[in-house]
Length: 190
Length: 190
DNA sequence: CTAATACGTCAACGAAGCTGACCAAAATCG
DNA sequence: CGATTTTGGTCAGCTTCGTTGACGTATTAG
Image (tube, rainbow over all chains, first blue to last red; front, top):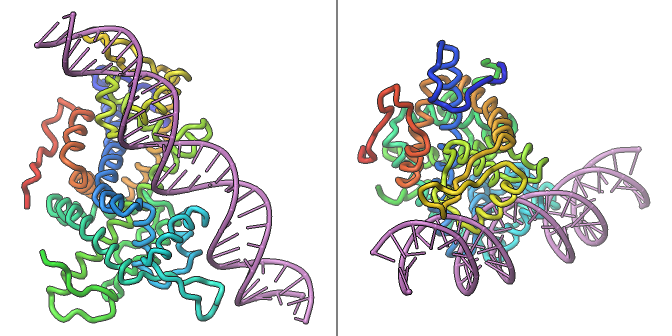
């Protein structure tokens, strides 16, 4: 895959062969993906952000509520690994959540150094409120796009994730043991 | 669409009817979407972020380079509308980019109050470097997922965007006049 | 001429990340 | 047992990138 010699003033120079045309398309494909991800992610988070702002919180609080809600009893260390931030950064968000009664810390029964994190009822209520807001938005997009598109969306997003994130996702999202494995695609499909 | 009465300890209570099963799936569907977007977006931006960090820049600089690169001669006002930030925020990123020779400002010939923004060669080079990094990542995901999935990905991401963002996208991404209109789907497909 | 527009800038602030240093409690290893 | 590692918390300071509010200037439009 060479260095795409000449794709400057796109759309100007009429491409000569199919090679150029293909290169141009791939270029425009990625530009489109960049736009879609920027705008899409921004608007995807806009709803919860508005609710959180009223409570003096931010996106980081939502992430904690989300992942603690998904895996009640998660340890601080596991949460840090999932979020990929430092404990100082987590602390500034987690401590207030505990103090204001959204999250409880209970010492682990095997290892009493651990603080197992769980949502309180208050925390569950807030998480659910944020969840519902986002649900409407996403479900609307899913309905418009259709089930085939949704499946494609999931496959591409999964592909955009790094290997570690993929592993964490599988751990965080038990793929419902009643159905068979969904898409154990290896990432060696060049 | 009622308030999902009872989906707490997911996977425990064997669902009784198809209704519950469906509700559960919709819940888990959204949880999965949240995870996918969080991890996917993060890893999507990780590559450029690393390059930018070496140059003492951040994601905001990349966005400016990206959108100025897409629409050379864009005005400051248009850029502000696309990014959805204040001029003060933009200023702190744009001014250094101009001072360090990545972007040029030329007065508009119709309206000389305007500063039309264009990438210099240096700016184009950096944008291209960031672009190539992301290209590898995205193309890998696209190849793994396949063309049908890519089309689905695009449809869903478009649906996640708000109406204004969708309009801006159409303006920013001229859908190649040689081909017919791609997907002029109205958002009234309930 | 006056008013609106496009852009810039100073000041202060907030959210959320970072590094580095240091500490306590509990588990683990020798 | 005693030393070390691990888990988690905390203090201090810094950076990026967003915000409001106020004010200034050039230029266009009424």
